[in-house]
Image (cartoon, rainbow over all chains, first blue to last red):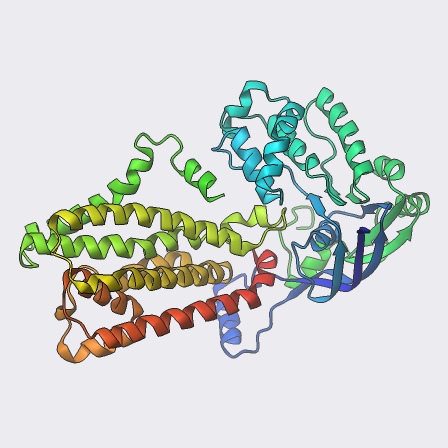
Length: 274
Length: 244
């Protein structure tokens, strides 16, 4: 089966969870507005009308400022978020490296967490058992593998998590800023393992602020700005343009400004302004 | 996943899984002392003890389901935002953990029933079926609680109080005969928990109850709750990750 990602006019919006009242009077007024059904939730558009098609063999880098919608895009492709409008079509086994160690239970041992994490990531028990020695060897945990994970350092936890993820052998790999974990020797090993993984996976999407990695690894780059695709092209042209703009599209409000505008007031006080 | 969570739950516990048997036994002890020793109520101590055991140990499934299922979605927010995982699976894991505790409690009950219970009649044949409907009703309750708590966190505070109210409004620690005669039909028709416990008492202890009404109420409420809970999941399920 050919791996492919296709997004047609995909929009993702979130209901702002906080209310806008800042005093008891305002709170009562808002409550009465809600009771009278005149209140409508404020929506935040994380992705607006995104259309793209990524085919087998492509290594796509996603760049943009913090809060512009990069992670939301990856989560939508991974199937974590369902689009409010539009359609997402993904062909192939997807593995998302969005964060390390989230599927682990720190009260269980590393060995038990390999099973738990593997099942959570979609591996079959037989598959996990077959690969467990390989995972343990790659994570270099030695005798610690049978110790509860609460005694692990963050580096040890990341190593096990990374070792587990690379054992999945996905068709489509989604990576979000997790390329450097552990100490220097492990970083070298993980980098080479990552390159092997990138070769194995027939389609990759990498979210990173590391523009050098993006230039080196990717065959195509998508620049996301305020939930929209600002530019889609070769790494050289997109990254050059991105750097030229200082990572900010002229006239586009920052995420803080967007949230500020939606909430009708400052999110947090700025001592410099007061 | 359920096994892993159970292992983690007994981490650094001295008694470990013994608590599965000890917790319900202690609960029965507390109610027994309260009702029989302090208030000198409930008739013959042996019968009261058996009735209390039946009520508390069977009701424990609903309490455990609430405890395990209610935080299943919002309590696993970080996991659900990093890995594509059907939230239904997490609720099911919570329910399996509740079922495990319930089965341990039932072992305690069956031992007590063998020693202190009345000689079982033919009515006992209905017991497994009542148990299945009770388990299904608890699953639907767990599914509702897990879903609604994602949107209304106040339920975390409200549900424990509601479960207590439900326990005292149903014949869990007292017999059906405690209700005024004119109330019985209304209570069992509109409260499926009352219907289930009236039937449990009827089948195991031989206490009289309006069997047909209780059975109809339990079956209809369970079916309706199950269908609606699964339909709600089909509708709301796609929104969970955006809300948590």
